[in-house]
Image (cartoon, rainbow, N blue to C red; front, side):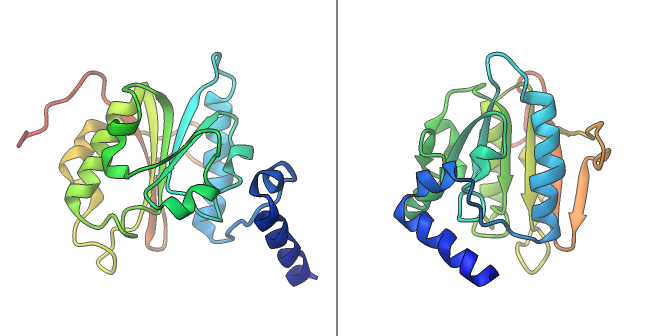
Length: 210
């Protein structure tokens, strides 16, 4: 029965992705880190930003079949970006850009977002410390004051040769522990996958080497 249902969902998606979204069709991953993202993290974001007026804006970096239903999961104006043109079909068709996560300030104005989520980038193509720095600098520029960055990454030796928390641009942020059920810490580890909550510094902190 499950295989038949999955086949029907795939058919509906291929016929019309936008109609499939309205029908509530999802292709969720069941891994612990993805469940944590879609439940504890999204719930916290919705509770703390969802009631803002005007509506809060969220940028989700990286799109695929497993995240394409996120416009229905987040009570914010959701923008999506992915470097691969073929993945645009999985983004929010109303607010999607084909572009690089290392050049965020090319596509968006400064202080545009209340929340930025980057999950599954570092360790999955964004594998150089320079790229991580560019991502963090761009996120810092795009976030509003007191904005929240949720970063999900793999920086073990099987993925990259650096540690995210030791990169230069990481100092643009403060680690932040949300006061919410199931959270209460700034960092959460699921095997080799890590989530960290970060708040941008006020102003523009100086970074050595610039």
